[in-house]
Structures are given as C-alpha cells and as structure tokens.
Length: 168
Image (cartoon, rainbow, N blue to C red; front, side):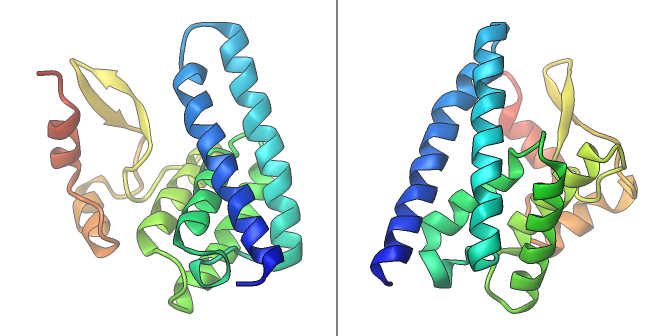
C-alpha cells in the first residue's frame, strides 16, 4: 500500500472511531448531542464523497479490511446525504459483483438507503423501534422471505437477532 493509501486508510479508520464515539451520544435525548452526531455524519459523508470521487469504492484491496469496513460505516450513517448513500450503494454493488466487497454489508446499506428514500427494505436490517423489549424492523418488501434473503448474504435470521437483543 502506498503512503497516500495508508494515510487514507488511517483517515477512514479515524472517522469510524469518531463515529462510534459520537453514536452512543447521538442516540441520547440531549439535543446538543444529537446535533453533534448529525454534524459529524454530515462531515464524514462529505469526505466519503471526495474519496469516492478520487478512488471509487474504498475496497479492502485498496485500503485494507478495517478501512474498507470504516467506509461502509460512514456510508451507512450518511442518512442526511442520500446522494452520497446512493452513490456508495452503486459503487459497492460493483465491488460486490467483482468479489471485492461484502454482500452482507451491501445488504445493510441497501436497506438503509431504501428506508431513507421512504421505501420498504429488503433484508429487515433497519429497526423502526422497540415493542415489548424486542426490535421491530421497518416495513419489508417481502416479509415472508426476509430470513431467506438474509441467509443469502450471511445475516442471521431476524428471530435470532431479536433474541440476542431481548432484555434479560
């Protein structure tokens, strides 16, 4: 990996670390924390757009596994940058077709983008809320096929996900 790509990888990893730190606070009831979270994800979305302009989708082959996963996380959380999410989705689709990105990660990004577009998701990865202590997905295009579709991309069945997150 060249020095420039190593620096890019480090930048992506730093952005993901900042995202993780801010995410916990961003889901709080504190409006200032929520605003800080929105601003961070907006800055990261802008930067991911620049990276995609220059390099296309940052695959593991290009920047390493951890940085590629960081790029996916940044795209996943770019909810206020639907254009960036859509572009990341297209580039990631091409990378998956070429065997250079994770179909599982693509499924999560596809669902997130669909939900942000006000459409039904496919894989049931996006949670609308919690009912009786269990996660409830946003509406799905084919609810009877969700677990089969999830299995195709390496995601656990929804009931297993719910059981893992249910209160003790």
